[in-house]
Length: 356
Image 1 (cartoon, rainbow, N blue to C red):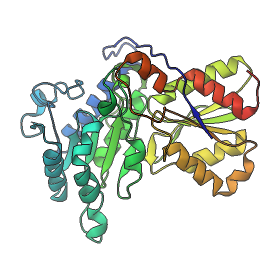
Image 2: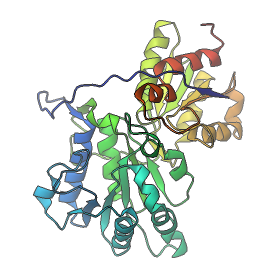
Image 3: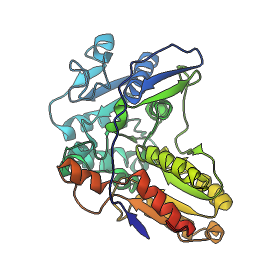
Image 4: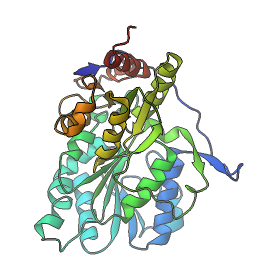
């Protein structure tokens, strides 16, 4: 069953400068966490470089690469013409000869111009060379809807890239996710599609002392329990995790204890975390900002159906997704296309058989 959205209301958090006011935890934006991860890896490994449109002198279209060109110079932070297929292909070639490129797409929507390079070159070289050639490359950039950027710039490509063997697909939510996963992606021997979210760039999260370390890494393929619960499991990733946590608070006020899982990694997918949670809660909903057809939630449902853990369910799984259509330009219509905390609450009650 697919529970499509009705309405969504966005509240922007104020942008916050990086602060060391507390010795235990600090606050920073996701933009700053990504920047820190790349800075540390550029410093640690001379094979790492960044290439993309406006990443150098302009400090990045979203200021994620701010200051890196001034620090590392033209050889390590490289501006390109508007030619995604060209610079993505160059990055794949560089990876094949031992470098570790970070290929930034101004938006992952533009990666469609380079999809042959990503899918038929980067993803397949290791297999087609019988394991002789690794392709250690990160394709990164904002993914999904932003605010008023219309159909060609608002697509969530998570499910599409997850479909292709040979790629790893990662999508962070918090600052700790962003830093730890990006550092792991840069060090990974295989191609990683790193899907960020433009709205999250300016959102502020706590960073633990551990996460501030240059040695902080998060394993690709391991989900995180953002909130423990016993009545229903809510699975999501990226920006939608915030909606799920907000929904969990609303449900808690109504006597429903929801467990929220942040997948972090979509391929490989941590099904063991989902199975373990379902054994406890006996109910499951999935939440994604992409389309319902052939979505990640559909894959999770199928895997659960095909496993022994299906017998732990007391009700059918429900998917909460975006509306199955191109994204309108108008903000009000865009709001209606994306899921909200309210939609998650309604889906949870539907699964649990709770009257509104």
